[in-house]
Length: 209
Image (tube, rainbow, N blue to C red):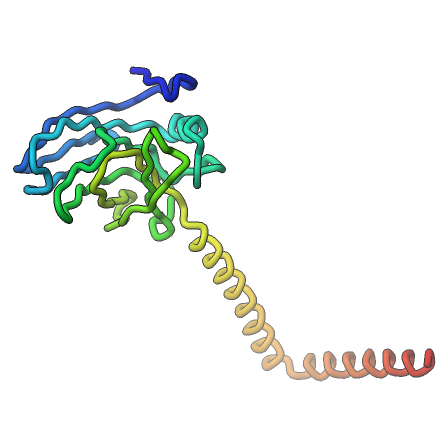
């Protein structure tokens, strides 16, 4: 089916599921897309008519561009888009809904954050609590409906790059130490070369003065 966003871009909705869930709780799932919504017993005070939608990555990125992107200005996502309607407070008290969706292939689970917005205010995103990232599935909690999508944590990427660079430097240092211990005469040659260069530079500066 097709769904118009703000009257501009028509996005192809690949999967849609409906369910009525009440006080006893229940599940709303899309097994083929590894999407699931679990409502614990007592989370709802009355029967709620839920609609669950899932867009593939390409449609998700076009949807984000149309809605204003916010933190997704680069269009990069780590998952499909998951939408749960209605986009309002659903639970009572401190109860949470558990939602899960599949991450992209080869996605590093440790660097994942999940964000939520609404189709009416997609330039404003809030981070939700991630409870697990096992077997390529990210599970998170929410108390409202809305549009959910996973994104790589930029801080994790930066830290990972710095750590990788430090490891490379450490390997070079250790390799150098081992080499000169094995061939001490090479170290002597290096020292003599440094001394010669130092003497040459010093004499050149003195001559210029």
